[in-house]
Length: 257
Length: 257
DNA sequence: CTTCTGTTAGTACTATTCTAACAACAGCAC
DNA sequence: GTGCTGTTGTTAGAATAGTACTAACAGAAG
Image (tube, rainbow over all chains, first blue to last red; front, top):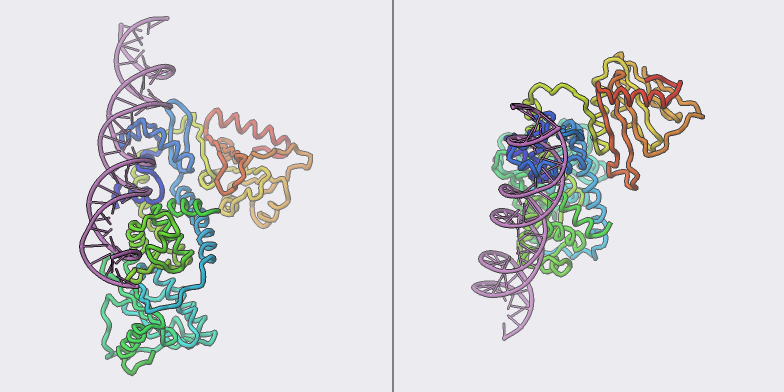
């Protein structure tokens, strides 16, 4: 993480280029004048005043109206809280409208021979949750080798659906899943040790009611935080039926989806 | 909250203008093609493809590679989680560097006749916390009439400092403070009912060790979420001594700061 | 044959980056 | 006290980069 990355990240958080540089410089200076900031950065001195005023109005700087004006950043904790508060308020504004827009949509189109592609772990998690919530009879969930294949929210939801009468099977190839679902209605099926092991990049496989299937694939990149997972899913289609048969065949006699 | 506000908010969250409009349109459509989106918005049809691809890579859309291509938004919950995750990762990137920059600063300048101005409630809360944390002997905290003058974090900190041996007085003009500090070492001083009442826009008053003072003022605007509070504070200065005497005088015989 | 689709290129406009200039003030030498 | 130099804070404008939007086209679908 170098200074350019941090400046870029601050810009992503909504600061302008000059604001980001002024804020970062003042972290290092502690307290400083426009000239001090200009000397430490490539921000033109005449531009420091406007950038600093904007930061002050956003609650990120304290100002001493002396001659010359002195600036100091608020604490990093206060700055983080402040930016997070701004983010949450902005997101709430946007999503209140989006919820009303969503409610305005007409009757959903009938499902056709659709295969959908989703990028990103949180989006895939969301789709998995939705498919599981819609299950009426049976859910089969399998995960490939992974440090953390099963999100807490998803495992909670699997328990909940199992307790509400849906048949839930989790296919595991290590023992940790037993502990997670030990006291629930979820059935954990252990693959035999000699079962051919899917190598990465296989991610998750979910089959719902024998007619909906989701397959995710983990991109082979280094940074797990970058949501580098892609999934396809399909429901009540010919291709879904074929994929489900393929998944079924891959599991052999261990379990039927 | 209308559509333009939502579009603007989505732009603040990092979407481009076209991306925001495509995403909002698809909330209403449910599923749609580039032409469907173009018809519902003023986004040129040729620009919908690029905006949609970008949204997909950000994990906000699902795509069906048919002819024509079909797009659908991920669920609003998944979208919110996703944007929040992006925000938290970006903020962590920025603040890791800022913390190292902060640690690199030289010895803090000696305090001079400084008066600092702070905008925004979270920044003022942060400064109050810092002043209270630095207290060695005595903290006096007063708040004007307000729906929620005392942040949980601040009240927790006041308790903690009282329990660690600092003398903490909270000056209240209603009974609710008794409940908050009933079982702690914090002393709550009730102003007499006939005490002249500060009218808004007075916010908070904090005096630390008889030599540091913070005075906040609430701007008279409607929206409490807009952090419309401004504070001044000063430490070990002549003006701080004067302000503290003024505050002392304002409290009459009820308490000495 | 017409319309639609997806892609690419380019122009016009807006925003940002950066420089220049200036009045007023502060500091210093004499 | 005066004169000179440097600093401060403000404003304006040119250059550059990014965004908004239109136009055009090949290929496919109806």
